[in-house]
Length: 521
Image 1 (cartoon, rainbow, N blue to C red):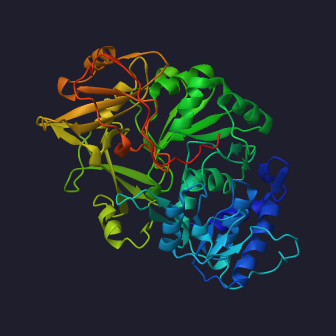
Image 2 (image 1 turned 45 degrees about the horizontal axis):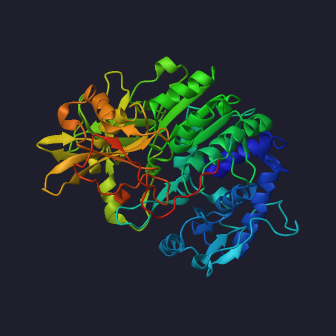
Image 3 (image 1 turned 30 degrees about the horizontal axis):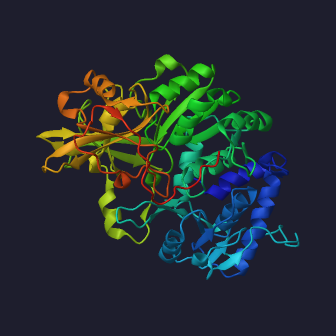
């Protein structure tokens, strides 16, 4: 396996004049990006950064961010992305926890990062030498087992934890993924926050295969405007979070017509919206992908080209090359097809572990008894079909027992999301005033009109056993999100407990909470 920089330089040498990065008013070829990264690597080593040191990067979404992270890697270091839209307390924790001394930044920094040594991605004047060998500690001395980046994700304690991803994890994913045919002549639009691992697909998935990464205009795009940008920029492939995919599917599915592939995942994806997108865009492929941050972006996929292919709920699919998926019981023994257990992921994309969290790393990163390879215990429940297709069955930490029955909220959510009049939903268990635990469904109505809970209940009764039916329904004007843009069940309001729970629901405003990161499109 090669390092990230080795894989990139193959294209820089082979196609130096091919456009690597494109933004409004800016074009950077592979050769120009190669030289800019060398200049930054020289400046970093000149500052005295140590080999394998963590270096922060807080550049705004632009070609300069790519210069920054490639330069950090070429200097023999690993990068830590800082999204300046995060709250100050979160940034301060990330700064302390990672221990970074140097930050590459092209924007004004909040006080939480003020004590770092700050370096711009590019000097004001291009007076740095970009020829000849780099100083010691540079990329040609790097090893595939060296760290590529530390990416912070939500932690159960309320403080984010850093996932340590090695260079070989990134190259194994970028060079072996087969759900989008990136390569020369293909262009992907950059759409995700650099603090989410979807950016690894957008950046390294593109640059390690000779494709082009395009950056949209600075202004936020509406779904209707997106189609014009995709056509004007010649974009062939696009990643969308589940939330953005749903919004575009509802408002302007035809905006995706210029694409060959749209990739979505990271949360439960609505089958109805996939059908809507495919119906509006004959010839388009929707790639439904799944993978925790700990296993480098994606470990399995389901490729969909026909609305009639779309099952409800959508299965996770089959593993990408070099990855194996196992459904295990509580004692770590493999389960036969059809039985539900925890999904273990083994393969070359499984990351090193968590930064400074040895106990948690030992708990989640284990040895797969079947193959002897390192595996990650995902905490997700799944089952396998006889043909090897993996079906998602919810989160192990959300499974509850009600009146002796084991209930998986995710299974109820999959059915509820198909109900007429329901735009989005969450299901959880709550303790009612008498002290018994009940299933509560939180729904966001599809339209401004009333939502009849009794009709929704009858729909579910035709699809779920009686013990899984919600006893309470609450209508919200939106689902609560945390700072990562993921659903935050802790902010769901208390139900009215029996007062017209199956009547016409009045939509109540979502309680205030921490703002999610802004979506880029």
